Length: 109
Ligand SMILES: [Zn+2]
Image (tube, rainbow, N blue to C red; front, top):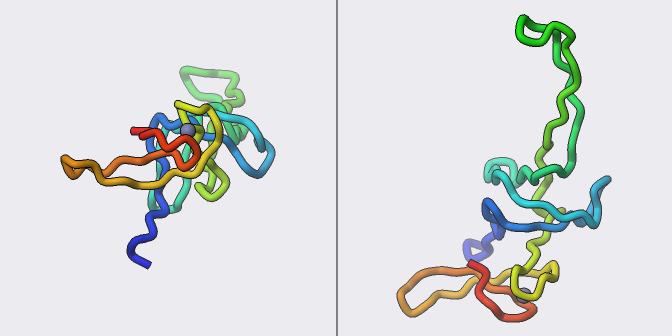
């Protein structure tokens, strides 16, 4: 299925989480990782990491860091109708390929 474009997400998209501990929350996409079909979403799916004491930070500590979320668990929130939506693709007259909201039909890009 070469026409099937799985990657509907882009950096700076607002997305809502469909599953997991942050289900129902929304955040901004910071990074997309095409290789693993995952994305890092700001302040979501946080995991604690323990830091070893170092010269700069003698006590060590706990760092909270975003872990990647599989894109099948993310849905784009349309900036026009502010609903989580499915996105489609449309080719404009100038041959630009843009995404549009399948709910309100507005171009998202
Ligand atoms: Zn919309």
